[in-house]
Length: 150
Image (tube, rainbow, N blue to C red):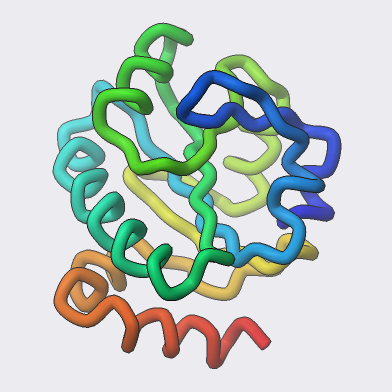
């Protein structure tokens, strides 16, 4: 993912901006497709946040990138700041958003893909896996993912 998004800005919780290529280098990346106006997204986001916080303690190499389907910048930022974990997002209006949606064939939200540095998909439906297995035993799910990652 770091190679695919090199040169793309990412925003952090504190409002600062980093280059995706360097920031994601060496990390296992989950692309999270969501929007503030989407009720199923609002239901899943707290589960992802809980999973993320548990996994991050033992696997600091895990990073989530929020790819918003919001229609306005303020909606994206408020949703991110109020409901999401300590991860990153691609700023509203960035051309990479449409590219990523198309590349990973995201038709509905919420959706999540776990991606290798070169952009190859490791887990196509990480959302369902987190919902079904990730809260109860996040470490076991992580190990499943890593078996496909290498």
